[in-house]
Image (cartoon, rainbow, N blue to C red; front, top):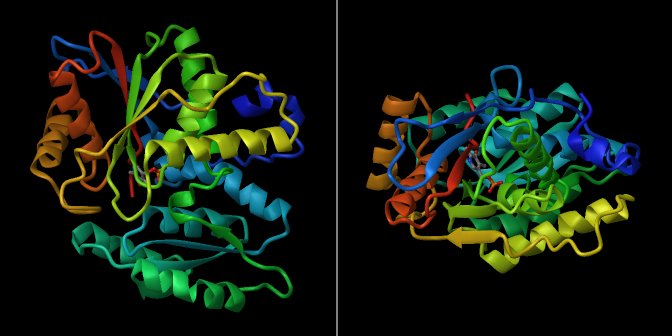
Length: 332
Ligand SMILES: *Cc1c(COP(=O)(O)O)cnc(C)c1O
């Protein structure tokens, strides 16, 4: 299937290759049991995105990142994450299919059942693992790791945590065009807000830019769940601006006056004690979503974002608008 970005900007077809790894469009549906007297609640369910039973938001980024690495002749991807990193695992599994090797620098995070399973999967994925344990030690060992993982003369393709590079965020520019097409087709009303977690920011940055380009007035509400990265509004709008620059550099004729900023709200009240630490509100949101809506969330990202959505809606923060919860979680 031709991605919306190529339909919209045919000049990108040869300069910004795309490899379909998931099934799109992902479904939108009303969350009628969670509905309150305030806003009308919907979900766009990106958990279905990805094949081989492995999905979620990282796969949308990889659709642009992996072909970009191949286009540059790279053989190895170096990236970083926690020891339970969904991102690292997605990169290893989808990269392997395309003949790319993955090297991961892993930082400690609170150990639980899920993290333990993830670590097992990482070990089985064929990725090369460096246990650098802390952010400081990862930064210090980065030159060594990069130097050790050349393929012949070719340097590895480096990706920041969560795949939130300017190219990675394009996965959610694409998703915003997809949502706009669903609005035009009458599948849902024009959303006033879209609520989703912020782990490394590529998802919200891409959405903010994509909604602007697609002509939707929807505001992006990013719920910060990670305190190990700088994830404020200027930083994330900066990432959106870098993605716009990539599109222009690759030849896309974007409208002159498009500002990839001003439609992004960052909320930090739902993080709790830190990245990966559960909060009681998130646990409640997770149970409610499962019981009332058959929506499976996980504690690190999506349950905290849903807790934010429910709390903010209870406070009337969305008025009587249409609020879409973007479910970034996938079967793992
Ligand atoms: C990685 C991840 C996120 C965060 O997305 P970013 O683009 O890194 O902000 C959200 N939800 C889930 C389930 C994730 O695995």
